[in-house]
Image 1 (cartoon, rainbow, N blue to C red):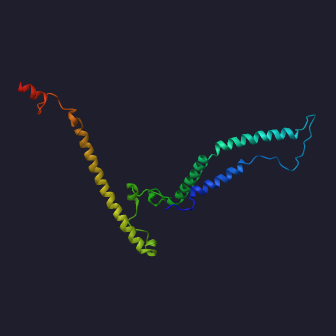
Image 2: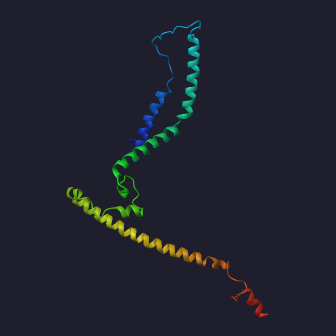
Image 3: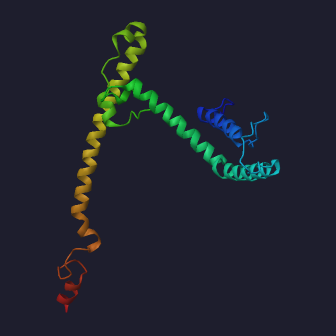
Length: 193
């Protein structure tokens, strides 16, 4: 069920790869002749010295690019750009504090998100799509009911955990005194003698 369409991260990684290739090109001196400044008895640079310096610089640049722009690094930068892009978009969409439920990709399993959701769709949306508005109301009501049930179950679980903590010392005789009379215990054996 995989599709051939690239993901946003793949597109951004491809863009970054082309930029890295552009940046990885060796440096070349300008083909236009540079004006030679007047020197006071100092010999001008020879072309061979310039070529040697460029060769060494290009070797260092190539070595740096192999280390800095590896496949994992490019993927990581692509994912960072993607995350920054979505976060910037969400800040402009959400705007108000307390409306995290409207943010793209928010987790509708969280209690605070469910509590923030309005009970009805906007009036404009109800006019344009009444069936979807009714479906939203139904799903939102169901979500609130499930959220209430989850809170109740969480309270029950917390109560059971507290009871288990209280009964912990009695597990496998860990906190029971050894001198108590128990069936087939040490004291019973002593009493039978």
